[in-house]
Length: 115
Length: 114
Image (cartoon, rainbow over all chains, first blue to last red; front, side, top):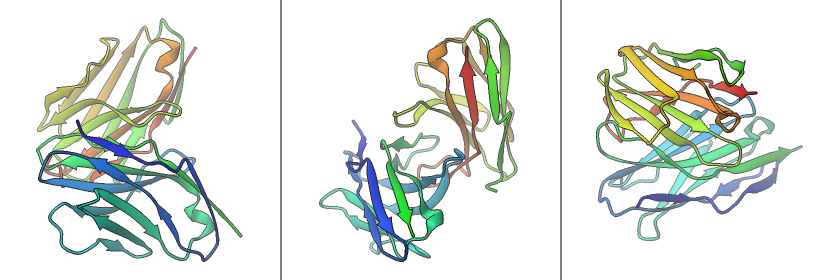
């Protein structure tokens, strides 16, 4: 069965510091995608970054980068230069590369950024 | 603004009421999803529609009834709900329905069942 594990219920960081949010996954599919979403208190789920299982390079999107270690089945999110607006819940998710397949989400990590 | 809208944003209903949640996407996508997010639980898939056809029903009780009249609109009809159905209901859309395509979410409907 496919599973996403996020072991950090909460993380605290100061502004301008970098932070790493952990994510490990379990799947027997050879082809899959890994996603990170941000959910502020308003509830909206905001897409941040995607990594395909066959991608050779780690994905980057602005201040977000994904540290993909396939052999370890980990897909950690790195946020550089944290901002107060980064305070939110962060979810790691996975999907097999099949049509109409739902995302499998982890339980999330709450990130709190202080000044 | 992700191009996916949901109405209403908040809904309070009694157990005997009938209500509907609406989701609309303006992205030209072909797959749409309903997820339920309860407190302290991961998001749970409820239904998937791919090219207007329901392709997955994740063992959802019959008091939840989805409807997808076209590829831009998705409804979730609610009747005789239970207090444990109180949750955030999120709609998502996806371009071609391939797993590698990003799912874009609406802002959600926060439902409270009294």
